Length: 306
Image (cartoon, rainbow, N blue to C red; front, side):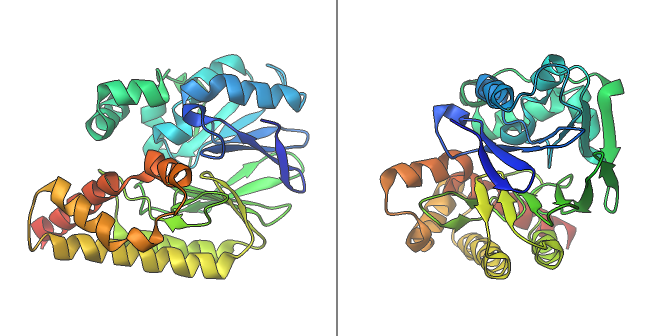
């Protein structure tokens, strides 16, 4: 698909994850140091590379690659991108850096969530990034991109190593998965609470940081721009709390994940897109079962530490 300009000097590239449009987006910040935010999985590399080429970016042109977190739908392709664009520096939160250099544990964790076959189908191989190419960041750090910069917000909740990014030139905020999934057309906002690291309290705090930090629009990795900052952030916090509460209540009836997932699906059916194709795209990224599994683990860890 043709890249789309979403803000001054920022272009969205549809990575066509799972050969589906409007599921996962990467973003290019133009300027003297062209920068890619998110890569998508390795299976999306051809679509991503085609989008970059259409913007005039060849192998020696990309200066930076920044990922909001290391989950495979966001950063699974970063090794392949680093190989194809050998001058690019790769930026990631400090807790995620080692897993880009050696993705063994990352792949093991993803396989527990998706299963080996489904993981390979969706994401493909995950190539390591040379350690010397990786730069670690944390809250308050700045990534200098020539005439603009990205300010780093540490936003745990979805994952312990999650960051959001604020573009100094436009005030645009790259959300990663901190607010959940918001796909074009359907217009629904769905929490993203996969195992193993979801933390509801931290997630709500991160949503409030995003609300306070976004100066213009939000750019979702899933998928595209959203202008309504306050309302969407309020909805994100409310739904995260509600979904967590549904799972907590379900745990008083059963500890069976499939039953809990069904209870969650039924309780949140009104938030499900009516169009079957749109609903399928949401489930591809953030199914009720995956969300239930993450929230179940969250509550179990809370109980164990009490």
